[in-house]
Amino acid sequence: MGDPWCGPRTARGAAQHRLEFTPKLDGGAAARTPARARALLIVSVVVNLGVLGYFKYGNFLSANLTAALHALGLAYHPAHTDIVLPIGISFYTFHTLSYTLDVYLGRTRPADSFLDFALYVTFFPALVAGPLLRASQFLPQCAAPRRTTGPGLAWGLTLMVLGLFEKMGLADSVLAPFADELFAGSGQGAVVDAWTGTLAFAGQVFCDFAGYSSCAVGAALCLGFTLPNNFRFPYAAVGFSEFWTRWHISLSTWLRDYLYIPLGGNRRGPTRTNINLVLTMLLGGLWHGASWTFVAWGALHGGYLIGERQLKRWLPGGGWRTRRAARLMAGAATFALVCIAWVLFRAASLSQAFAIAGSLVGLGGGDGSKFSALRRAIVGTTVFAIVAAHWALRDRSLEALAERTPWPVRAAALGAMVAGLFVMQGQDRAFIYFQF
Image (tube, rainbow, N blue to C red):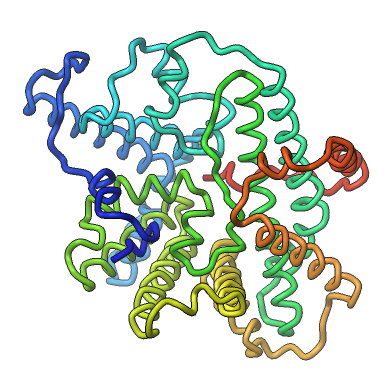
């Protein structure tokens, strides 16, 4: 049976990804005994998670503990702490954790120098918002001096222009104002307003984060380094297990390899599989931020994965998946449910999220739209173009598309994006994932 987290896999492939927590020591490892290796691993995990927990979740845990004690009638007033979240803490914490685990498990050799390790952990294009790097992907590139090549520089700059256009032109200028207008209020309103704002945020969060990832990959390529692709046209996914193989790929594979599979994956029966899916998605949601809205967002995606798994059991055979009409319908349903989940991701509180969700299904109590027909058309057209592009490219790559496109067309497209950066000036906004 295919893994509901990462799609169908062969038995051999599953075995390759399985984590067995037994150290495989080699001549390059500093720890020569399993006991010492395990002790060093525990110290590394505790220190890394402790630092992340203090800076990212200290205030969240303190506030919830205070609320729980007050509900029990106990007056508790903790000392106020101004915890400043260090830039990129989630990403370099995950880098160091994966390095420690991979060395412990014999998946990769220790870095030959501390400088190489420091570069891996703090590589600036990916530090603030990813992609998450694995030591096995990055450290071998440090073995020899990296040099910029003509083709690498050209493609790297192209990706940076594309990423900036997605961020500044589409996310900030076209889509963000509509999302902000919906989420600035109580959430109660007309159905058309709720869907306009929700679709706007669905397009904004993709263009914002995929734009940053393109910039990061492009900047690294200009320096002679290769980073993993972080997005693969996710809004063309058919089902939620496929969505998570296309959205924030470096995070979803990290959670799969270091959390879901060690918990047992789908190897211990349906009930345990469902529990593992929910736990993984809950922690994935919490990773995004110290808020119950992110926890609920992760729980909802865990429920989506469980529901998809159950639906595949009920539907006879799998021939329907090869029919174009059925795949389009399943893809449309996947996209709609992902958009509903984005409400939790963007909302300032659970109450606002529930109010907007009610408005999406006609329970908001509003009967007049505050968005004009023109403004709704702008959002609808932009999001439709994004989704259509994903479907057109779902089985291809940008590199393959560029190679097959005549150079005058490529030049015209690149020129149009550069011009768009000057024409489509929106409010100056930080990348969304900077806060994580």
